[in-house]
Length: 370
Image 1 (cartoon, one colour):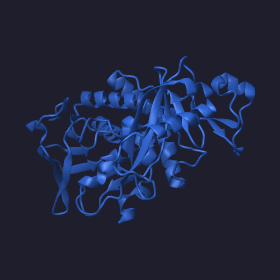
Image 2: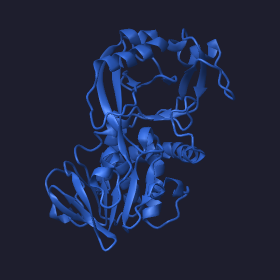
Image 3: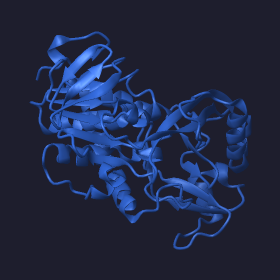
């Protein structure tokens, strides 16, 4: 291994030549880097991040691991459902391994979610009042049909921090403030990337740059655009106020280990504008308080906006770029980056290392937009 296991802001000649370059140090890029490092410890892996690792969409996410959404906020494609459920099944072992390697917690919880609906849902048993009081009494006064969904959640910020530590311990070289300007391609094969700090060479490059995936493209355009989401965090007077993720068609909120509750989120077509609007934050808080009134008196401790990488069909881009041997994409995960991280990492690693992916990736191939 030639990489330096620490995060760099300065150049390091030893990492100028690698076996694989991963562009983007969000949860998708870091998960893939760790998977590759564990599968082949001899690989020289370099991760290049335009800013601070994990501080874009991953940092802004809520962390719900919900492969089935009654509100249909997710793509309805059966192929996506298969991928999402596969990823959710991987999650317990995924976080267990990361926590073991890093020595850090990820705040993974399998408590499930309580879904509030104005209308009855077919095929799901509705909770009785006594069952609801046992699960989350803060919701007991809520009007509507309430269901217990078998799903999980994780704290994305804790997950990213643990992934960074785990990657460093596996000798993955992670460079922050190394914006990739161009993928270098010669004679139909990728040769590396060009950054503001110079060139990095590798025969394999994986574009995990999220909402910025198209900005570093060479050749055909990559159909990824930003989808803005605003969120907030509150601290109730008494904690813990809730123990489950709570969702409806209009709002979701979930508890953190430190007592905070994260509330989200909007979906906006605002380009790369990450400004937070106070009226939007107040509207989200009110929607949450409509379900759990005690949230109306909770103190807002933070608010933020993130940019999700969206595609025309809201499905991820997983696969190789035609006409550029060695150039792969793992981006466009839209609202499902946290959910799909373990599956994307495992399946893309199998593809890159010339193994047969356990799930057919052809429906998610970048070639579908060619």
